[in-house]
Image (spheres, rainbow, N blue to C red):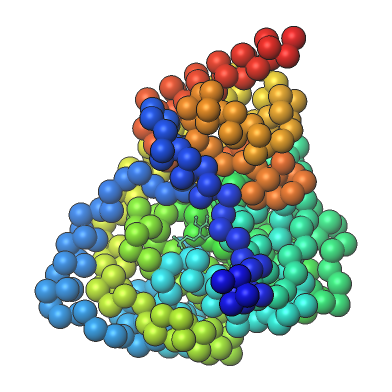
Length: 394
Ligand SMILES: Cc1ncc(COP(=O)(O)O)c(C=O)c1O
């Protein structure tokens, strides 16, 4: 059968989470902290809007770009909250979530052999999609001592004549870092100077704590909009991961080509989900605010508990629902550590190496999208398992 499989499919990897998840599922009494999804229910007003839309008969194909009412609602939101002016007719494409938005964006701009600068660590789907398209990911390390904020010099050093794109992601998966306006601005300016594109993945834009602010690079410099492809999603903000809805904002020429890729992959986004998305943007945001408060409470607990473990270095995340502690002093091999924790602490996490070969290694990603009881118990189990390891080594 192998002989039938395409080169592109061979180059594609599922994320490192899947193997751990499958193993965790077969075990008893495991606290699952490997998954990247909200544990909250989708707010009722959004569910009601979808039900009503289905009953009204919105169960057929829509425009490839998404229904005009949703694109208008998105344009208003972008102007109000992101400071991005986008023409709903030509500059916004509704997609089946952030994954799909990233796929259509990369497929529309990358040729085989092109280089794409990604950070180490970064969300692994970027690397898989870049490789699927025959392009080459070029890792640029993030410095943990600088709260995982990118260095402009290191990015600049990696730019070659083959560089087509830089992918940035703030708030960031897996570190939870929220990058400053100044670095986002500087990266965008650099890209413009070098005539390369920026893909700004902003799917965690709302999951921010401690008074930190989200910045959209497409808004911060006049004309940046032509160089920045901005990715947004309803998944994380509204606990809508299973609904599969998001959008991409870019220059109209690029959107035109993304539209073609979207057409041949999905024909159009789900009809009634688009009506639910209008309600998500225009309806009450109380549930979102409650979820953010709860995530911050959970972040406080997991950060304080994990920081107490001797030998563990932990950077405080100011966004997302992930924390990325450094266990290098205890065990540098993050895959080995993950399996050790699964078997001995009965806690499932993701090995840091799934997010980056150098900086990612030595770390684990813990998702705190779970109850405070689970987080306290998981931290206690991890601490005990690490202590056992330290005593058995002594
Ligand atoms: C950084 C990042 N971008 C994009 C996505 C895609 O999410 P969705 O397709 O559910 O919008 C994810 C999902 O985990 C993510 O972590």
